[in-house]
Amino acid sequence: MKRLLELTRYAVVIPAFAAILGALLLMVQGSVEMVAVVIESVSDKTTLKDVIVDVLTAIDAILLGTVLLVIGFGLYELFIDTNIQVPPWLRVEDLDDLKSKLIGVVVAIIAVVFVGIFVDSNRASDVISYGVGAGALVVGLAIFAFATKKNNGKISSKK
Image (cartoon, rainbow, N blue to C red; front, side, top):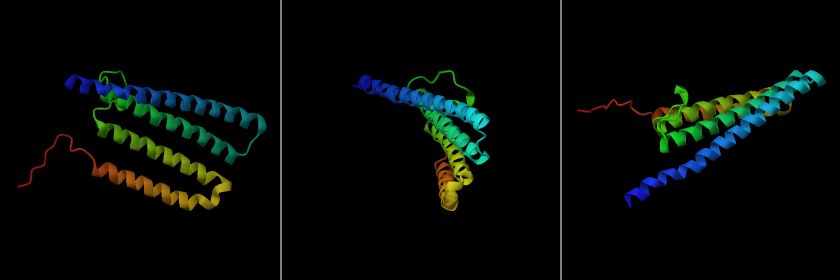
């Protein structure tokens, strides 16, 4: 029974690889979109604001792909193989590491989306509401990260 329970950790292989495949798809599509924006802006002389919105949309897809990649590698590293070769910044020792990495990338995505709304003249009336919402979300994530931060091995003793 114990061995069967230990083997259930391999159930995470499918979601980990699915996240990595989704990451690759978004990164490729974001990169293709970026190339298309460059070609279109050079040949059609589009306005600067339109180029900025299109570039930020492509960056948003790439950043979302990065989130999925972090999730995929993190899950695989946590449950399957702790010795996979990843850059030191992507190394995940526990769920707190994965959580903090995800919060960092999500904040970057929020910033990109907000800037896209900020420069889009068709959505000028939404800037305040999106700004307040984005700010509240970032503050909430910061509070969550601080409140759930691990002690780094230090045990506080109350006397």
